[in-house]
Image (cartoon, rainbow, N blue to C red):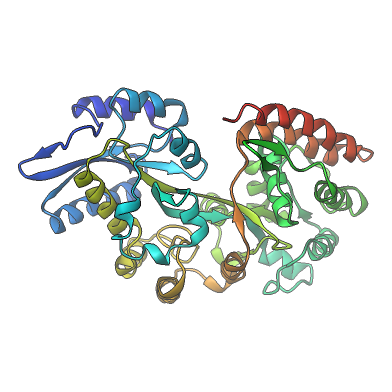
Length: 442
């Protein structure tokens, strides 16, 4: 997904992407946009290019110049300084705060009131792009972490696949039954920064967090009773119940393989994992279910959106917002998109694009009705997740997330590989290291 070099080259070839000028051409407003999928993603690329053509047909005064690529924090500032940043650019939810602080995105507060259905977007998603009441971007897709489970193995273990666990106590009880049925009950990552990533999800699920704002800085916030509760629950399943299997130091590919091979009962995941497992193992969507995060006191939130070049003219800002709304935030295009996906053999029914879980109110109701109408899979298998996501507050990753996750990997690894691991000491040592990382946050 990271195409920084290709993007830079592409921008050069079209005589620059930057937006310091009005860049009108023959009376048209010309805007450079990124987010165009690469040629290797044939279906997504075709849809994107068709959408560009249709948008230009409907808006004859706007000329879109598409570019492959998405957000690469390592090259962003260089692109902006070199005039190579597109007028409309893709960001992950972890990016807007720092870009806004460095004034690297346009203030669109005066324009967003004219964006149709802006008020129907989930508030927590709009908050990602809002600072001190000023708006700097629009969310277009999101995910929250939930509990992915094997409906086949649930049935095999005597569990009701239509009633997935809702609490961590229920997860433990189900994992024991799954183990007794001959499969690993619950699996957890603990390497490649993914142990820290999932430890963060666990913390949010029990009402805790990884970092808290302390004045102008951040402090570690996991060396407490919530952190000890998470490690205790992992120890209980791993060592007391033996329901997490003997093989540890797992990462996402290992766990997806276990689930796809029918050797696993449950693990924490976002909805795209279901599609990945089905595609990789030529499986069936009927065999899997997705539930809300156990505990439901909070969950990890991620996603994507678009921002506008900080030097964009008012005409470009208006044109850019018109494109973003038409392409990504348009309830009037939902049915046509779903029909297109279904007719071209693409799966429909998971809460992932083209059915992004971003709406409230009437658009959300309309989307759910259309999803049921055009679904190519049993959407009821994922209803517990969709319903739970409305009730569970999602929050973002901590600052310097990957560095923090690398430190927390060690905590999860020690818990899952050493029966006698000292949880209090593990959390204390990690707190010291994470505070050193967070002290670098500006």
